[in-house]
Amino acid sequence: MDNKHIAIIGCGAMGTSIASLLSIEKEVAKLLLCDLSDEALHAIEQSIKHILDIEVTVCNNILHHRHLLVDVDAIVLSLTWPMAWKYIQDLAELKKPIVSITRPNYSVFNSLQNFSQCPLSLPIGLEPGLTEIVIDLSLKKIGKLDNLLLYCGGFVDPPPEHFPYRCAFGDSVPIKADEAFYIENNRVRQSSKYDHVEEIFIKELGFLEAYRDGLMPWIADKYKDLVTNFEQKTLRHRGFCAQVHNLEQLGFLSDQPIKVDDHHVDILAFTRRVLAQRKVGHTEVERDITLLKVLAKKGEDKRSLTITSSYCAKYNLTSMGMMTASVLTHYLLAFIDHIGKDNKYYHPHEYYHDDSARQSLFNYMQSLGIHIEGDLIT
Image 1 (cartoon, helix red, strand yellow):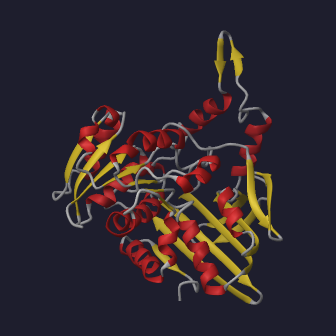
Image 2 (tube, one colour):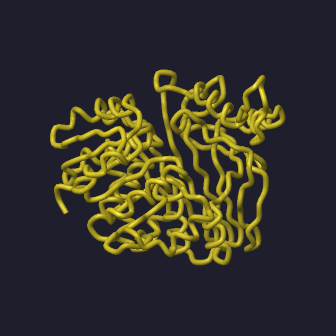
Image 3 (cartoon, rainbow, N blue to C red):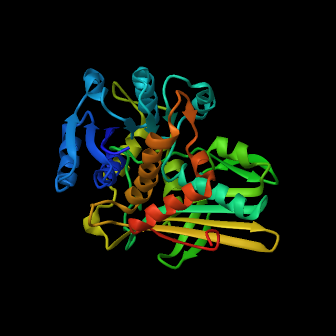
């Protein structure tokens, strides 16, 4: 379908990245950009104003202007989960395809299997999304696995002297001392996040630390009979986990509110907002890199895959924005044309079981300058 008209609700970092990639697609003619922040809408308009072949409309409260959605071919949500679920419930009656980047609460994820109000697909981005696609690729290439290890992270170089975090979501850093899921001997287990830290050398970045960030619960349940040992670890600059442990020990990651004078203060929300003010900006770094690395093993058969993205000056996209938005954009266009025909829930990675669909995704990512290498794709 040419002349696609797409609405994007939520124009923060990821929403802007998605809009930027959609704006250069020849089959996309119109974008409806929606955000409660006039500042965010102005920023995204400025970032794509040089694209002459796209018609852009902005709206700061789409729930009050639903008529603008009548002619759209699909709705993209780039919101926090509680807000994304609210919009799904409010807009499902329009029967428009909805694709969301947001990972859902596990309890809601199970109920999605019976969803029947509109074509709905989520979550699709980097993790989960691309991570599930490469898990399925590993199993298809080798069969049941003895070991599967995923490393994923975004970095700046040189490393910042203060708290080394690159990305904030809105005005908050997504940090929390909770439990991480992993698979050991075909059983789903849990351990404290930010534990089991290992040092790993990445040729593009040198020595980094990796901690057990954990699988999504539904991923752990799904693959426990197919992979004997399976972990997903987040990569960070060395020293990150020690700083998190310090915050935890000092009580700054507590989810219990405290009373200050006559006010109740959410300590975790406070910490997340303070850290967001310390995030690294482009002017402070020489390189911005996001990396996904897969190590798969069955007996003596060992294979790997590495996907690397960098800051894109042409579209002013962060490396994380490039990798995440490229997956969602490729899937969204296919969802409109081929997939989302019935009012039900579609799990995104199922589309990429097909070799040609998966290769099309990798080709698209490479056309944007994302580097993909490894014997899992040869």
